[in-house]
Length: 122
Image (cartoon, rainbow, N blue to C red; front, top):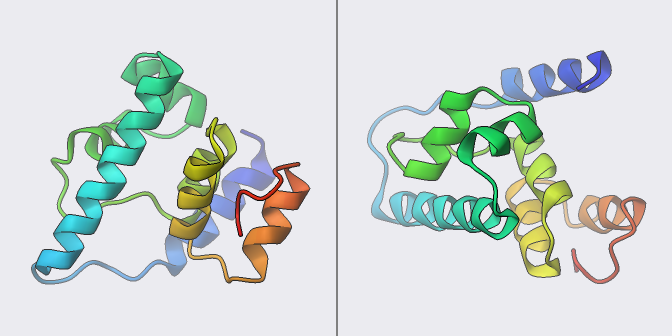
């Protein structure tokens, strides 16, 4: 990952609000959906967890927490969701991770178009 990408990732991490208190049932269910989608993406790629986090260029503990669901309150941030969308093989997965990235409705189609994805972010 180049320096500009690292700086962008750090900028978005600093903007994320801290997770406080206990999670609601809907937050827990949503994290489980995200965990299942991340695991499905890794499994569809037929790679190990190590190969997966190396491909994403993210810390192993972070990615493993997504895969196992052991983390409380952690889910992929905006930057990570864009990375996950970028390596996704199906339009459904791309749309899911673009939506999870918290980009605006206007931004998602622009990103999809820039990456050459047709109809995946609508």
